[in-house]
Image (cartoon, rainbow, N blue to C red; front, top):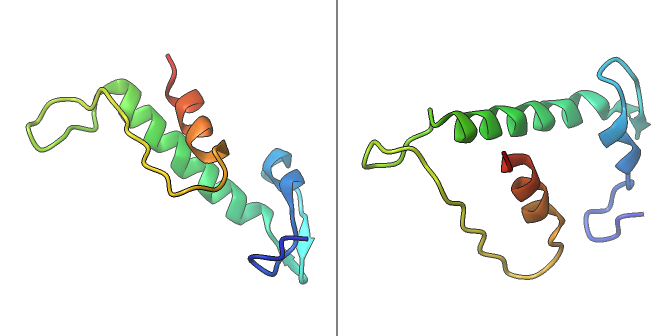
Length: 84
């Protein structure tokens, strides 16, 4: 139980195939998970390929994570996704 967000903990949905159904409150959460996974993949590919540029027109080469506490898993995921 995720008490802070008042919802089910559905880590298994992160490993579910795109065509699977995992329901919470009668809603299939798998499409939402895959939407975020697809956005993460697009972000990573744009950074790796150099197609995402900054204000100077140069490719981004560094990522700075500024946290306020809580889980380090999100920044770790981004770091792992961006490794070449």
